[in-house]
Length: 355
Image (cartoon, rainbow, N blue to C red; front, side, top):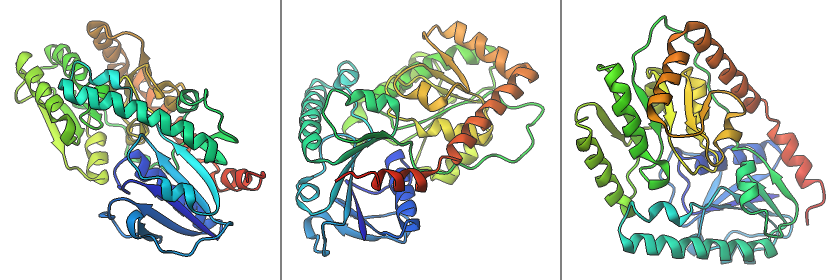
């Protein structure tokens, strides 16, 4: 039996890529032959799966096959997914609302993102007809598409195991703040920098570590971030770190003081769990899937009152008992993710009669 995962490009460093690779390992353990069908060629590490390009796909298929379409918005040419024989599963990751691009990019980009969002939901409507099941990676994403009549809906988290920092908690840490994500408007990097402008007044030696990737279409937004840095006179304090491998990101997290998310739209937010595993406290604005991903660990804040957030961070970072309890709770949540029985759950779904 074959399982084909359809996606635009298989990357090692993002949530979709991590999920697809994890699912491939699960399917292999269940006795399936694993395949990826992508629009763009694979550039990452070698995997024990076969790779195919959409435009030249020739592999034999049959009605017992399983096809999984990883969906994060319009763009993937899913007619192949639609027409191949076998069971069809939509793996829904999220669609970013166009509103985040209104005042952060050019009018042309905002208009293009409005069209992208509209087209994405039109595709979702079509996919709800042809798919036998939908697997959302968070309750938030499940609610996003709850108005569509998908059959056999499930919530299955990102399929990944997380490493835990086994080093002893140091007596003291540096005061650097870190966030990880694409340099795109919904991540609200400008708010992270604004918060840091308050933080650095308390801790002049602190650094602000912005780990991400620049999206070509949104380079105007990245330019605005550099303007924000100049506005707050933070040159030399803000570090935009690009092109980092997963291992390098984890190393930076382990050496940081705290992970802070100001993002206002996340479908899952994998970096939060990587920060949990790195043993650093996590502070996050309550938005999108973030509360569900954190499962009660870390610290959520409900407004962007920067002085109040700084005070709350200080209370939790520098009172040893609170900090130890915070990190301990994060480790417990991370362990619950690591114990998620993916093979049993997926096998159970597939054997439940989705046709």
